[in-house]
Length: 252
View: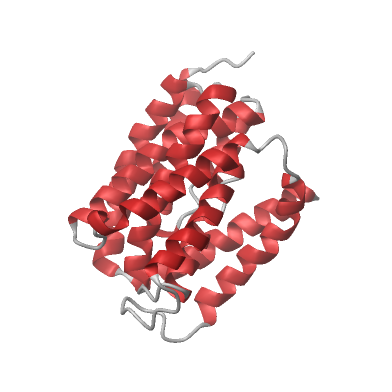
C-alpha cells in the first residue's frame, strides 16, 4: 500500500517544480514526474492519472504566461484547444485497448529525429516563416492526432506540437512554444477527464505537485519569453534525447 512520507512528498514536490520549469520551455516534464511517481510506489495507471492532475497546473501557468506576453491569441486558438481536448479524452479512453507497446518501440526513433532536426536545421529562430498548411487544416488533421497521443501515452507530446507548429504552421520557435503549451493544457485536461473516471488519481498529491509546477512553469515561461530560441532549442534537443534514452533503457 502506498504511503506518502514527508521526505517522499518533498522529493515529489521538487520533481513537480523541475518538470514545470522544463515543460514550459521545451516539453518533456513527464520525463521527470511519471518515473518519480512510479518510483514512489504508485501503480502505473494511478501514476499516469496523478501526473495529469499536476501537469494541468504547469501547462495552464505556462499558457497564461505566454498569452499575457502577447505570444498567443486565445480568441483565435479556442477551436484548436477544444480539438486537442477531445483528442486527449479519446486517447486516454482507449489506452487499454490499443497496442501502446508498438508505439513505444518507434517513439525513441521519432524523438531522436526531432532532436536532430532542432539541433542541425539552420535558420530556426523566433521569426515566423512560410506556412505550409492552413490553420483550418492544421486544427482538423494535426491537432487531434497529437492530442490523441497525449491522452494515450503523453511523453513527447509537447515536442510533437512544437515541430508541427514550426514545420507546418510556419511559427517561430518562441511562438510555437507558446501555442504548444495552450494545446498541451487542453489535451492534458481531456486526458485527465478520462483518467478521473478510470485511473483514480491521487488528488491531494497531484494538486500539491501542481502548485510546485506553477512556480517552475512561471519561471520557465518568463525565461523563454526573454531569451527565446537561444534557450528553447538546446533544451528541446536535450529533453527529446533524454526521453528517447529513457524509453530505450526501459525496453532493455
